[in-house]
Length: 186
Image (cartoon, rainbow, N blue to C red; front, side, top):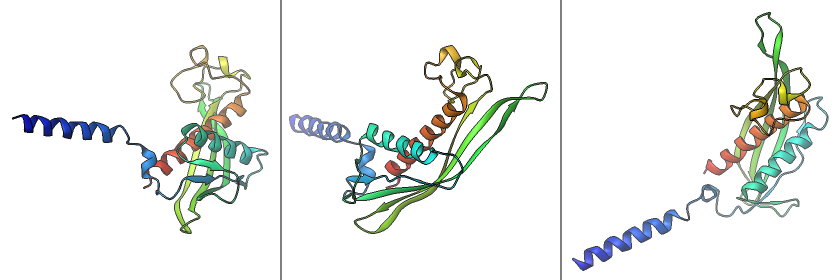
């Protein structure tokens, strides 16, 4: 009886110990510890957009800490991207059929490449969008600008110039999707 209890405790201990070390970073190939994220190419007329997207992706990877971001050629992998298209147009209309909300959408293409084994690990198109109105103050426009279910006074991160904020929201969504795909690809 004591042997069965001891084995049960040992099995439970191993189970809980191993679960404590689970992470999505374990799905990344084991030889990849570092990542280089150079400035994206920009095929649009939006000045500074490639810099904003690159900075947003860098920030998200640094926050998560799953791969060490390196600026030089000594990285194990590289994440290259191209801003393909920006769409900025009407999103919702009022009862009087005038535009009440605009949607700012960014489309990019990325490739995550394994520099050690010289092969592509992930390729894909990503897009993100943010909404904005014409009021000039997103803190009182009645729009859920970042898609979090909160508007105006209930949303403490809605501030700034409307179109620029919509761009930041789109960049954040793209960075989040890329990070999620990299962590779950393998």
